[in-house]
Length: 109
Image (cartoon, rainbow, N blue to C red):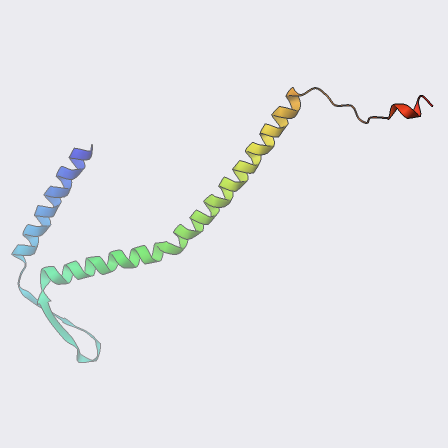
């Protein structure tokens, strides 16, 4: 499976590389306030892709941290439940203890 995924990655890389080589003509981007930038189409597509990926990762960051905190709380609760269960099992296997111990001096003056 690892080899298959690497083969697919190599094929995709060469496909996109060939696409970039075929689209080298210049494209002008018009921004606000009359600002213009002229670059090759492949470079503009690459910049847009990387920017979108970074914005996607940035948008996911708060939920990832929230899930990590929640998982940590669940791990602590699970550890406490496991300790409680172990204590219950130990209590079940031990001999019952007397309710109270009365000193013998009270019975034999």
